[in-house]
Image (cartoon, rainbow, N blue to C red; front, top):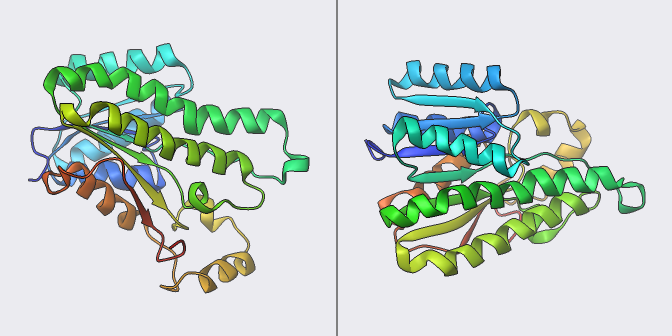
Length: 247
């Protein structure tokens, strides 16, 4: 069991990519803590993962934008498990529109949830990782943060900022055996993608060299690699999981 004895925290883990990541770590023996906006949903998903994979789990509803609430969540996780070995920052939202039509609230919401939240979570775990002289932080960005996308200036700015943040923290704490990396998914088969018009999706697939959408497990396998001993000398990097869309 690759992660037996380790504690993995995944934000936004009640569906899609986050849920796939949490299950993948649980399958490899990790204790799992997840948070989401709805407390009952987080608790239910955590319980389901625990019973399915016979591991310890914890779920809590957290406003990921609230620095103090995030700190209390990590206090609860450490009270229960004693440590955090791996942090996966996956929580994110979209509020798409062309810049001329983009409302300030839509800008603020995306920046707060997608970018400011990783300051909150990373700040909450970094002292604990420093004491242990071990930590793996993986931030889930997007190909949009690398290449931009019309109608997603807020989302691209947040994901691009996430990449830059990851590189800076990687430089600060590499000597303490804490690695910080980013996974940038392309278009992945999730509820968010399924809601897009079929013609639009068809055009997207035409521009992907591998001629298909990705799956959540494509992303979770990359995350697990970066969290594993096999990636102990890799930090400050961006792995694009996009079928070659951005190269």
